[in-house]
Every structure is written in structure tokens, then in C-alpha cells.
Amino acid sequence: MEENRHKLTWGNLLPELFMLLVIEAGAYGVHWWQASTFESFLSKAVLLGMGMGILGFQLRQSRLGDEFDFDNREHCLRFWGCFFLAACLAFLCIFLPVGGWPFLAIFVVLALFSSMSSGIIAGTVLLLIPVLFSDATVAVFVLYFICGVFGVTLFHRLDDEFKIGIPLFLSLFCLLLCEIAGIILLQNARLKAESFVIPVTNIILSGVLLVGILKLFSASVVYKFRMKYLELNDTEHPLLAQQREASRKEYLLAIHTSYFCERIANALGMDKEALKCAGYYHGMQETLSEKEWAESFPPAAYAILQEYWHRDKGIYQKETAVLVTADTIVGTIIEEHTKNDDGVINYARVIEEILAGFERQKLFYNSNLTLHEWFMMQKIFKEEKLYYDFIR
Image (cartoon, rainbow, N blue to C red):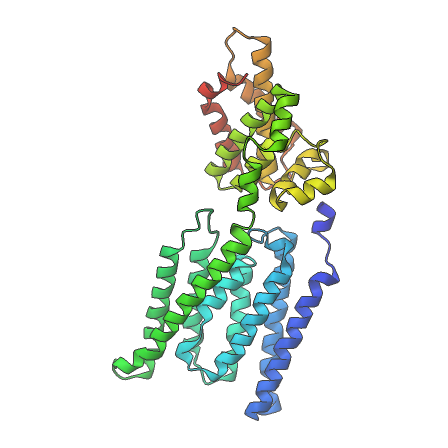
């Protein structure tokens, strides 16, 4: 797994090289249509080429550092498909009034299907196209850049509830203010009603595009596995029912482990559904084949389970660290209850000893679990004294 993370294959480079050729070919086509000098074309082509180079470098760095949002790391072609469509729209903007460029939507869609930093760089590269090949001023570049960055920031890390109302309103309001300040007031000595026609039209179209993009994003990424998680996280799922019949103890261990996984994921902003699912099924490795696990479970949950089952090779995900900790603490407390059925158990001491053992082993040193998250996790486990009395 760690080896694959650092591989840079032609499968990653070919889309980048293809898009570089598309951008440069499009720039040459516009140069030919405008009948500009070759020196002018060459300077613009170099700037766009440098921009594409920076974008490619950023995408590779994000891939190596697991900085992509959601499951974008496994779906790079999805990003390049969006980039191609956005590039076509950027070339079309050359022939549109500067007040009607839909770059707010372009910035947001590119960020949603990659990461915040990659989306900003990609949007900026595409914004250069109409700015360089039209009579747009620096103010126009700045206004669309500000709107794009603000939009990306607002829609970054959408949660499972997918609340888009406030980000949508604020991003469109920012676009309106920037259009007024950067285009209307600069181009007109005084405000006139007709000056607002194109900017308002742009805001309406940008709003429609954003809603469409967010709907597509929610269906293809955020809620792609919602029904699958609802099925897997049902305690009457056939695999869980089978485990309940085979071993009541293992079944209860899975139920209690999943409870803590979900609680900690909620508190720390982790992938709740994937971690909860891994909590239910982490003790069933031999139940299915590797192929069946991969086909039956969402990629995020399967990745946690794989890392848990092969943790001797290292733990790199914070979700896996939570699963290991929850499983160990719950399992230990169940054993303590078995040995001391009527005795009083010092839960805080048991938890502290387990966590101290993890620290001595440096078990999670390679994971992306922060110190703040580690201490928050300890606090949550120690607060559940009443719950532990029911763990049997």
C-alpha cells in the first residue's frame, strides 16, 4: 500500500500531458484567429505552459501526501475530465463580455474534484486564458481570482449533511460585490441600470452552475456509497447475524467497538460511516475472500480494514488508529468483566495502561493522527464510565 502511494506512473502523467497539448493547441488556434504576432503568442504560450507545470507538480505532491479530498486520489481522470470541460469554457470566455465569465463555478468544481490548493491553481491557470487573449484588465483577473478562492474556501470539506445554502449565498454575494467594484464602477463614471445586466446574468448562471455541480458532486462522491453504508451498518446484516450466531462475544465486541468508532469520528471530523463500518466487520477477516471484501465494501471502509488486518506493516490512517484503540480497549474491558464479574474495575487505569503501551510501541507514529486528536480520543474513552458497566 505504501509502495503504491509513491509510484508515479504514465497513467498519472498522460492526462496531464494531454491537457498541456490541448491548452497550447487552443492558444495557438486563438492566436491564428486573432492574427497576432508570433512573439505575442509565444509569451502567452510560455505562461500557460508554466502554469500547467505548476499544476502538475502540485497534483503530484498532493497525491504523494494524500492531500486530496474525499476519494479524489483514486479518481484523477475525474478531475482531468472536469478540467477539460472548464478549459473549453475558458476559451469560450474570450468571446464573452468580461462581466459574464463563470469562473466562480470553475474554481469550485476543480477544487471539489481535487483539493483546495489544486483547485485554486487549476482555476488560476484557466483564468489566464481569457485574460491573456482578450482586452481584460488586471482588475478583472483579481476580481475573479478573489471570487474563486472565496468560493473554494466556502465549499471546502463539505460534511455529510451537505449544507450548501449559506456557502452558495455568500459566494454569489461576493461575486456581485467584486463585479460592481471591479467592472461596473471602473468602466462607468456613474452607476446605470443597464450596467448590471451582464453581471446579474452571470450571477444567475453561476448560481445555476454551482447547484448543478454540487448536485453532481453529492451524487458521484459524497453520497455515492450512502445506501451501501446503510445496508452494511444495519445490525441485521447477514454477516453480522452470522457472527452473532457463531460467537456472541465477538458480536458484542464488534457492536461496542463500532459505537466508539462512530463517537470519536463525530467528535474529530473523521469519515464516520467508513469507520463505523470497519468497527462492525474488523473481526471477520476470514469470513470473505480478499476479492469479496473489495467488491462488497466501499473503498474507504475497505482501506481501513486492510490496514487494520495488516497493521504489522504500519498504520498510516487516523481512522485505523481509532479502530485499533477502540478494539483493544473494549476487548480488554470485556476480559476484565469476565475475570471480575462482581468486582470494581478502574476503567481510567485500564485505558491509561493501554494507551501508554501504544505510546511505548510507537504504534501510531506513522499515522496522520495529531496530538490534539490523540488527547481528545483519550478524553472520550475516559468519559464513558457508565457505558463500560454494560459491556459484557
